[in-house]
Amino acid sequence: MTRENITNIPGSRILIVDYGGQYTHLIARRIRELEVYSEIVFYRDLNRVNIEDYDAVILSGSHLSVKSLDKDAVETARKILMEGDKPLLGICFGHQLIGYLLGAKLSTGCSEYGRTTMKILSSDELFNGWGNSEVVWMSHGECIEDLPDSITLLAESENKVVAAIKAVVNNRAVYGVQFHPEVHHTVKGRRLLDNFLGIINAKKAWRTENYYRYIIDELGREVTRNGVAVVGVSGGIDSTVTALIGKKLFGDKLISVFVDHGLLREGERELVVSSLEKLGLNPLIVDAGERFISKLEGSTDCEERRRVIGEEFARIFSEIIEKEGAEYFLQGTTYPDIIESGGTRKAASVIKSHHNVGGLPEWFRGRVKILEPLRFLYKDEVREIARLLGVPREIIERHPFPGPGLAVRITGIFTKKKLDVCRRASKIVEDVLGEYGLYSRVWQAFAVVGDDRWVGVKGDARSHGYIVTVRIVESVDGMTADYSKIPYDVLDEISRRITNSIQDVTMVTYAITSKPPSTIEPC
Ligand SMILES: Nc1ncnc2c1ncn2[C@@H]1O[C@H](COP(=O)(O)OP(=O)(O)OP(=O)(O)O)[C@@H](O)[C@H]1O
Ligand SMILES: O=c1[nH]c(=O)c2[nH+]cn([C@@H]3O[C@H](COP(=O)(O)O)[C@@H](O)[C@H]3O)c2[nH]1
Ligand SMILES: NC(=O)CC[C@H](N)C(=O)O
Ligand SMILES: [Mg+2]
Image (cartoon, rainbow, N blue to C red):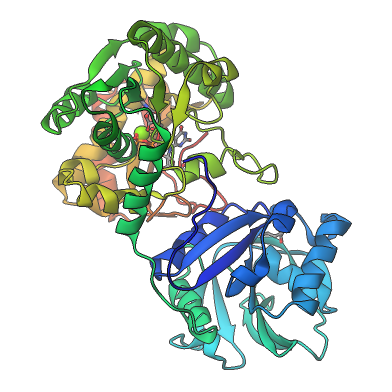
């Protein structure tokens, strides 16, 4: 999987120009869901592709401001817009860029984050199936205003920000939307992208199973058949599917390794091992709790903890690789891991270094060939492949759990005491949701422990305990999320159970911020 793109596929092709936005691959993924193949090119590499090979171009979002975009890039975009003839859709930054190039004014101080209501002012095919007013998801600090006559204003947000525009340039349609149609939380976003495909008369011929077959073919050509391979399995969906792909490629020569780093949830080790055994992936178990915890105690920075954990994982894996003479190392890296680490592109802003990407030290990369078969996929696509491969529901439906485990659910200083509180409180959150039949309806549900204290009164005596924050979110791919509107009686049950059974907790709070502007894990 060293190649960046696929050739010889039937149907239409869409080119997505990546300016480093957090959701660029989500655009590609939505388009593929709509059965049209899409490819991403980093904006500085545009000279490497031939725009004639595509049926339309989408300009992505960005952490950059249009004003800070380098001159060459502005000139390239201007050529595509003013001299080219491919239909165009700009999203967020892309929309601002199109507006700016057509003569609109760029403004700052018009931030909108998360859920926003938008009103359609002028009907257009792009909004077929949309009501006059719809919920969209925003994530921007800038916007365009003072539109020239060549631009039609299609929609504006409740804050009177220009939300959608259209222009006809060189006899073809050019659209811009300030919101993100690609994120799940924009209610009719998928419909908008489908409308765009309709407007350009796209031929739909792309299917997900094809992508799985593509992975197998591509890797099958790349690897040596009799080579030994090692895969780290966490019991999560990504590494399970990766291990099954590994088994298909390497057979008995695949060694699955489960590391107990002491940061697991209660009962997790037993559960993971038994589910993996059922799939024929009998894992080698590495007992490394002490090794990890002793290095984490006293640390205050989560990014530092991720680095320490990444380093320790790498040491353990390289010991096994050396001992077994392995040639390959498979990782369940998915696209969010890569994108949120700023991994593939020099442009993306680093939000968190998820340990398997950001934390993997250079020395490890030099020792073994790393295979990441799922690196272009999102969790729900991985789930689709898992179903295709007959992975049991209990694994498919399990909540995602970060590789660094409970270490990223402890804010402030890391102590064994807080780890214990976090583990016990998380178990209560999961148990109560399970009892009320809500566990599988939410994306993730857990407890977070920080350093702040709250004075309590327990048994008529003053106590000074921890604050536990409960985070329960709904999401489809982890890229955007909203807090779950859990009934009060369920929250009440969670709170009472936590304060009653964990002596050192005097307050339970519920986290009610969406992603963005927040993230799912606290650090
Ligand atoms: N306890 C563990 N033992 C062995 N390997 C692990 C462990 N935890 C994580 N890994 C490896 O690191 C990869 C990334 O882990 P992480 O949990 O951050 O991602 P994920 O998207 O949740 O993946 P998964 O769904 O496989 O858990 C996993 O896919 C797996 O290969
Ligand atoms: O902070 C993290 N470090 C990791 O190593 C990691 N691995 C997976 N996840 C899962 O990825 C999704 C997005 O998480 P965030 O909104 O917190 O970035 C959420 O579902 C996270 O649980 C991780 N999160
Ligand atoms: N998400 C985006 O594309 C944001 C664009 C630009 N950086 C802004 O803040 O407005
Ligand atoms: Mg995991």
